[in-house]
Image (tube, rainbow, N blue to C red; front, side):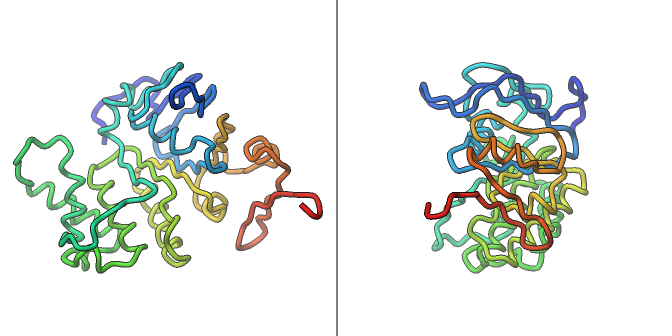
Length: 261
């Protein structure tokens, strides 16, 4: 955990931020604060800027205007306190790497070239493997695991950095229903253990059940720090009338279109 106290105790503070690529504005006048132990679900249409926002928080994309502070520092400095699970992770199925070795990669940050792993590194890796319920599989080759198991390995790798904030970009996009449920239960547990989470998802089951608050992003950000997804938020984000059905399972967001269209 952080050994310093930053202004206002925000993990991330974004004010009037505009960002994009070349002259194309993808994020417009974004204002957002992420507090310790938040679990925010970020929804919005494809191309709405969700991944771009994560890149800005990670310091991989500089704002065109406005300000962002991560742990009271610039994103480039503050990102050492962030764990990140990207939408897609490409790996060579023929490369003989074990589950434990993948998770150990999370301990490489800040190490000097050829610096060996310590007992602390080993203990943290074992702990995070236990968190994701893969400790008994630590010596298996990554290629032998299912898609859902591999995704939990990547979450463990991000957790091995001992992050204050965990960013996940569509972590269940290519896994089956049972694996999705396990991953969401896992994220709930991780949040309960003190890790703040910003989760990008299209899955309204997650938004309705697991997260503490919801943000809707489509160039503009609509966020009121609460779990309720209002009809106005959805219409402003998806640019068409929508209906949220959230009586029992599954939950769905449906666009209302005229007959014959």
